[in-house]
Amino acid sequence: MTKRKSANGETNGAATADILRNPDANDGFFMGFALNEARLARDAGEVPIGAVIVIDNQIAGSGRNCPIGSNDPTAHAEIMALREAALRIGNYRLTEATMYVTIEPCAMCAGAIVNARIKRLVYGAADLRAGGVDTVFRICANSSLNHQVEVTSGVRDEEGRQLMQAFFKRRRKTRSAVNDDGVESDDPENTSNE
Image 1: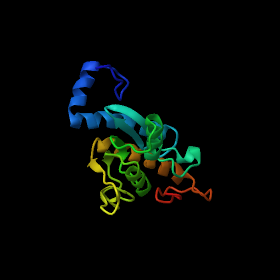
Image 2: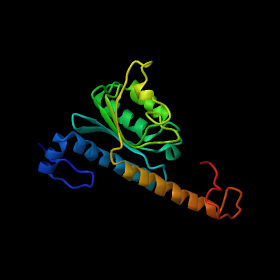
Image 3: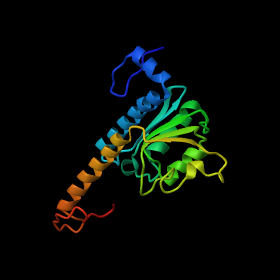
Image 4: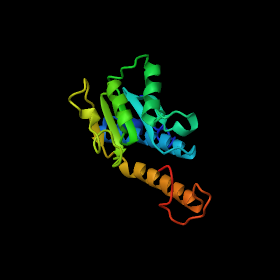
């Protein structure tokens, strides 16, 4: 087996081969790449969500949230990863793919996952406000649709949750100093556009 780059940038062929034989370790391993994408989104000032699509233990597509920078409301991490993987394999159907995403996909992304015929979805933390897979909507398991997705949740969920909480805490703190009217405020709840 060839050496692969790990989520932290190190390479170790033997250790990677062992990880890829264990499905639970495999999920944690690939979620590491999604978490790296989330960190890149955070560093760009975007909501820190990352996704990767894996086919035959190879990353076929990756994405991070970028709707602000791209002025594209559909530029969620999952959509970006779907687009890249579909282009890479030359097919809009990703029937043998597993998607790893740091936070439960929203309704739009869950619909796109179903439309792409993703075989399996692995996500980290639940999205209690807008989750499209398990918490608010159950799009990926909806029997009215022509495809259902196998779902695994909770993989490295604390890491994804901490990225989100730190991002929004920092954002609220920045916005609480001066609100949209230019009036100083120490109330972290006095924010707009959230």
